[in-house]
Image (cartoon, rainbow, N blue to C red; front, side, top):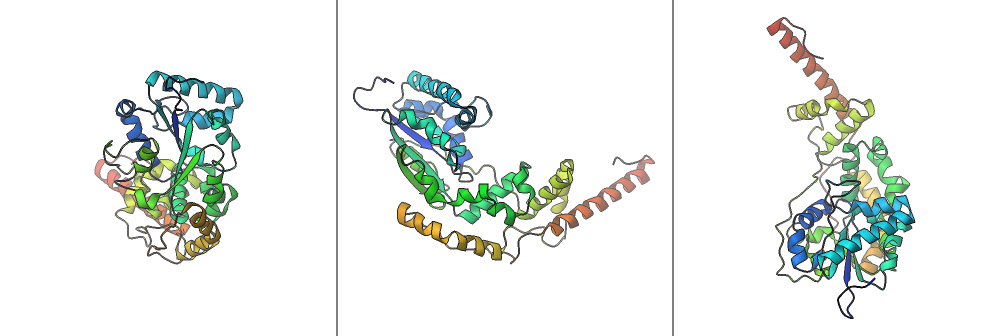
Length: 331
């Protein structure tokens, strides 16, 4: 691989997640300001390709690792061609899926570029209970199989629990390049882009519009309602039921957190050793604030009460329609 930069190697910045740390906001800003980045010497390749051309992330990297070595090589060639054509000196790639543990193919994708680029891997980290609740919320909304169970089972299943061992997951990248761990809680908001822009060699004078919050999780009770609708395979009732929640006096309908104090405390205690290693090895220290919440996790009974309320409200609307028009109401 040859670039017209003389003896200086080009720079590669890999934004490797994690999920639920402002990644959509970051990627949207980089996609929408690709021209400004290119003029500043940074190529953010066009993300508008399969498998998710409407999303601002480089999902085609993860997809290639699923399809095998030939697909990976073809994808590397496409990325390099766009980088060469851009005339930039820095290549910036962003994909949440790169943070997933237990998939060495993710690191293998970049291994041929070790020695060809000066590589920096940037990973944003969020206190694990907050990450877990937000991830569970997203998985419920997507009707993911793992989120058909209650949150206690979700956070302790092997595939999810492995995500919370940040020191082990960061170590996977140490053979690829310099690794930068970022405490998301310290940069969210106005400073969200700063670690990546710094890694890309951009001066503090390079400005992007303020980050706006994307992919916001609904209230906890809404998530439990959606989960119950998914289990009953009646997702078509979601808009009516969530609207009803705003008018309902069902106990717990306005609850803001899923875990509950007991599970949160137990969960963080199990992570104490991992977070001590995180502090020692990566100088990341999370705050110890706890939200005001009930002792127990959100229970399915809240959703069931709302489902009954929806059924009653539907019957009342149907009866009112029939009384007014003399015609049967729609079911």
